[in-house]
Image 1 (cartoon, rainbow, N blue to C red):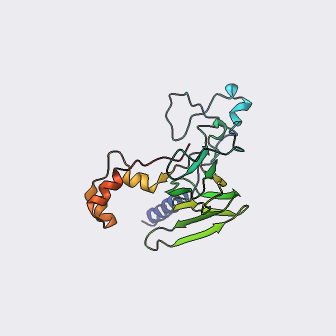
Image 2 (cartoon, helix red, strand yellow):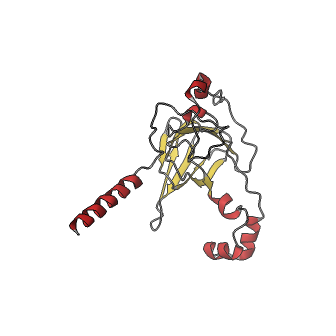
Image 3 (cartoon, one colour):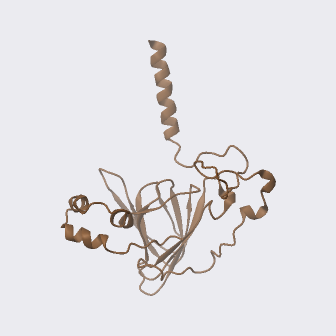
Length: 226
């Protein structure tokens, strides 16, 4: 009986330790360049044969020094993500990055990264940023950032960035501790899902008339990620 309790105790500790891993699993070899053409399906991307790996697998002419187009969507921002799908050498290394361009009054609307914490650095302009903690507190943390400032958005929490200037664009670089951080834009997911969530459900959740929900679901919910 005592040995059974001891075994369960160790199992519980092991489960807690596994759950504490907040980023991608550690690699088991030096490199695992993504083989995007492989028919094998794994949690991530399969590795190229080492004999086929080339230096350009670790290089991307991403043009991140150039302004990106912020006129393609209504939120007036452009997120250029560099992940393992674009840079195969990132596979299994647990990191990705993004350049984010904001037009005057543009924003990267409230969203979450289900698999990554984000650290953001402002390169040009100013940004009003914030995140909200989980239930039941839903505490809101916000800050005005200027050029050179750094801010952290904890993994999985809803966050945003907004350029308050009426005449100046802003630029930021973000690093994320996952090769595939994912992004769930709240408005798009709730009101632009396919098929749509029943308006009865959303009317009750947001405590508004169903006509308001129907109008929101009829909008074109654009993606600002590239």
